[in-house]
Amino acid sequence: EQALVTGHTHHPAPKARGGGPQAGWLPYAPEAYARFPLTLLAVREDTVVDEGDTAALDALAGAPPGYRVLPAHPWQLDLAAGTLAPAFADGRLLRLGTTGFFVWPTAAIRTLYAPDPDLFLKFSLDVRITNDIRRLWRHDLLRLRRTDTAVTEAFDAIGPPAAWLADRGYRTADFAFEELAVVVRDGLRGRVLPGATPLLAAALVEGFAGSPLEDTTSPGAWWEAYLAAVVPPVLTAFDDDGVVLEAHLQNTLVAVDAAGMPVQALFRDAEGVKLLPDTPRAAGWERLVYCLVVNHLYEIAAALTEHHPGLDPWPAVRRALARHDLPEIPALLAAPTLPAKTNLLLRWTGADGADARYRPLPNPLCEAPE
Image (cartoon, rainbow, N blue to C red; front, side, top):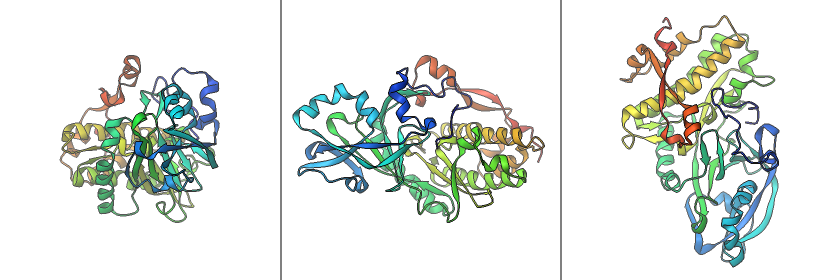
C-alpha cells in the first residue's frame, strides 16, 4: 500500500496534495511510510447519523453518556477546523484523545488501515488528489448500503477464492455530514487465503523489492494465474448481478502463495461501484473495460514485458476474456480501440472524476493471436 512513490502511471498530477505546504501533508503520506494515531471525538447522540454495521467504531473508546465515538483523520480535522469550531464550542463535539494504536495510510491516502482491530477506515479529506476533492459525498454515502449489499450478494454467489472487502457502514454528524464521515471497511484477516500474502495491484506496476511479478521465472504461468484470479469475478458480477466493479489497480489486491504465484483477488470500494440498470449497460461496460483492461491489465502487462521482454501478454488476455459468454466480449476483442480516461483534461478543468470522458486508445486485444 505504501510502495507508490511516483503513483498513477499516466496521470499529470499523480502525487498532488492540493497545493498545500509539505508540512501539512507529509505526516500522512503513504509514500513516506507514515503511521499515526487517529483522533477520537465524541459526537452528541442526537446529532449522530449512522447506517449499517458500525459497531467497530464503538470498540475504539468509551464515550461519555449521551455521546457516540467518532474517529477522525487528524489532517481532515485541521482542514475543517473553521467549520467545526462552533460544534466544539457548544458541546456537540468533544475531544477524547487519540487511539492507543497507529494506523497506516493506504495508497488512497484517505483510507487508513488499523492492523490491531483489522479494519480499514475511509475518511473525507478536503484535498484534491489526482482528479477529485476526496470527500465522502452525501449522495454516495446515502447509496452505500444498497451498493455494498448488491456487491456482497454477487460475491457470495461467485464464491471463494474471490473476495469483497465490504464497506459495512458509515457514521457521521448531521451538522458536518461530509466533513466528519467515516466508512467502516472489512479488514484482511479471514478473507485472504491461509498462507497467502495480499499485494496491491498498483504496487506490482510500480515495483518494489521482492515483487513476484519481477522475480518470477515463469512469467507466462504467472500471468495466466493472475488473469484467472482477477478477470472472472469482475465479468461474472457484471453479467450475473449487474454489478460494475471499479477494478482498477488501486481497488484490487492480488494475493500470492509462498512461491509468489497469484491465487486470489480481493476487491474493494463500494463508492466506485455502479449498478445496472441505474447505469445503462453500455455505459457500465465502458467503465468496466476502462478500469479492468486499460487501467489494470494494460499496466500489469506493460510491467511484465518490461521485466520479461520475451513475453507476449495479450493472447492470454484474449483467452481469459473469451471464456466468458458475455454479448460484449466479441466486440471488445475485435474493436480497434479501447476507452482511455482523459486525466489531463479532468485535471485542467477541475471536473469531478464521475464526469470522466474517454478517448480511443489502440486495442492490443484485436491484434493478439489466439
